[in-house]
Image (cartoon, rainbow, N blue to C red; front, side):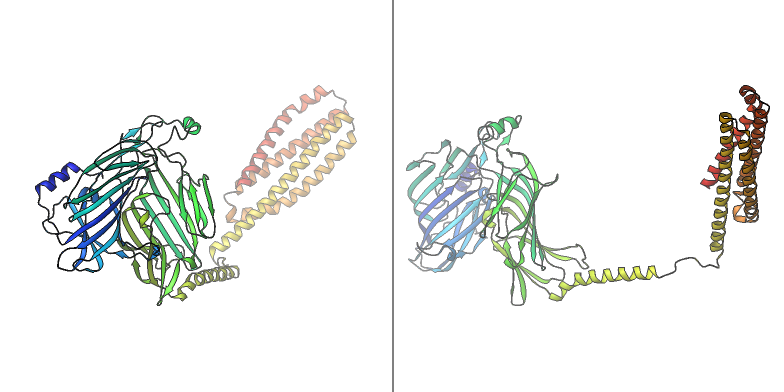
Length: 610
């Protein structure tokens, strides 16, 4: 695999590695699957005890450089044919550090279900899953290129024990094989290459092999996935998954042509992936898919009673090195995942990502429990980091406890069920409804009290009396404005009678109009006097009284000049003067009347603003 074989061979040659001679591997069948970005190595091993002591553990060996990329290892008892698959027995696997072992090797101890006596044998299966061991070569390609990768390994099974017979089968994608290492007993069957069998190999035997082949399968890598599982005892579990995704294949260089990609996606985008499929639990509801911009409509959802599948498409095809961020959210029925056992509730849900064949460099699972939960405990079938946090949401007082699980280098094999146990008092479910009811009750009672309370200032206070006086002053000023406006209306009627006189020559009608106007103006003058007297006696009107008095004076001056003008015009008509001479006689009066009318209007506007 992707480790430095030269350094490894050099280390093994210099250091005398210990040999565990009590055990031998009588037969090893190894299968390597290179059809995706995740490398899966399956081995069927038959171990025999040739010593006199009972042996209860078997050591598995990996080069240190290779072990850095080991995401998952699983050892199960090799069942006979016809045995139910779900009944496979898993053996505990732990990292150990035997004495006098080379630093370039990493050892894993497999605990057997029962000790092997002398002459006894046991067959078990080992599944080792590796990530980031397929290296693009070349490292950068254009849009039109296909992707080639290089994979390194050893044809011999690396073991601290002697191996009697072993064989290796390498499964490659159905694509072009650029080159591969040819050894004795090498056979090719389509995209599968077989090595061996090889017999009587001593401990720590290695034989480097190299594969250079085309692999255009998707290389989605989630550099970080934050998965939040929020439990609500009101009937739903809400799951939110935040992805920071990158294409982990050969880096894209040169320009990208969407036109070429749309026209020939398999020829001008063979190394890119356009969609991903998330396999969600059955009865999933309220599914959404969005990014920082908003909802993404290029997705498809279908399902039945057994499964739900969500096909998502990023906003652009993903070439090597390209990145995208998005969020998937969905709801699950509570009764399918939350159970009770011995006075505790427990959540039973899968750990990893529902998206097929995605590698997760860093996975954070946050299980948000209802407020009031206590005595939390977690059961996860593999190693992980764990801590507690608190999250505050709507109507929370103490906050909701959050169980946080973290694991690096996660693969689909980690998508196993885990359990979160906690205690919860059902009475706590009434906390939020009671808070809402009490809140609305307080709101309505406050509204009733407010509507029936006298919030006005005391009627005996100076500020209240001053406000009443100012209200009276405002009323009087409005009455003064109304009287002045009525006077101006009478002025307009006098002007209209003169226009009628020039048109009809009816002198008597014009005199009657002046007489009626004179009587109306006198009545208005009488109404105005007590109002002016009130303003003169009020302290609240001192700042506006000068303008009101000036308005009254200006209106009276305007009134007198209009009467003089009207009398002059009527006399001229009685003496049968011409129109030009009449205009000359009243020209000076007309100019002053126009100026006074403008001044009166300005004063009215000023007082109205105050």
